[in-house]
Length: 50
Image (tube, rainbow, N blue to C red):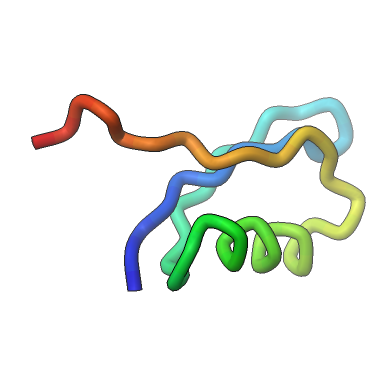
């Protein structure tokens, strides 16, 4: 399990949530289940984190 930061538009508001998931695709699936009317969903990676 890894922590992913998922961002999506819900009712014209940008929401960012940390989710634990096995892969980025499963994290997006969990976000879609939590917010079924969400749009523009993507994973924000911590590229510069040590």
